Image (cartoon, rainbow, N blue to C red):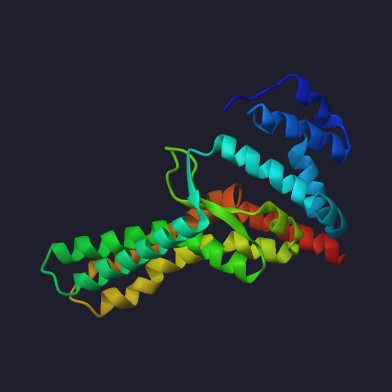
Length: 239
């Protein structure tokens, strides 16, 4: 997708949400990115105001979806992706269960293959389950780029903007919390199996490394950055 630095750039300094949305609509219609249109600053203003969200949520959702469609590498409908992720989770659990009946080293290979599958499939499912419970909708599943092939679930931006900031925050956190919990939850499964004792240390070490990675990097980008952003909005609204 192209990045346009000309006509739409003028709207960056324009305080009008309407002007930013008009620029964004022209950009996505021409298959340019939203960079320079003022769309995301306008979204930031709308996230902080339930009144503005009621007014602009549908229009912003249409722009966001169009920009997403222009950018995404691969996508499937929500029910198809959810079915695949649930089936993948079941496969992961089955691989872990089968490990109990296998001899070394196949038992270890099966166990950690199951762990790997669960780490891939449960992240998006965590977002989906918590978001749905909080009234946030989703439009489908996707793979954004070959460099980051982990499946993601696309939020419906109209329902997202209308949701309270605290619920948006916990929806963002849910995927990270789910995947970080997986290695620790499997410690018991490893302890009560015939797997080598070192597998427990690997699981704990992996879980700790994932938590440290989140603290060092994800708070500056990705889910935890969005969590902190939305909680800041909640505190601002409360005050």
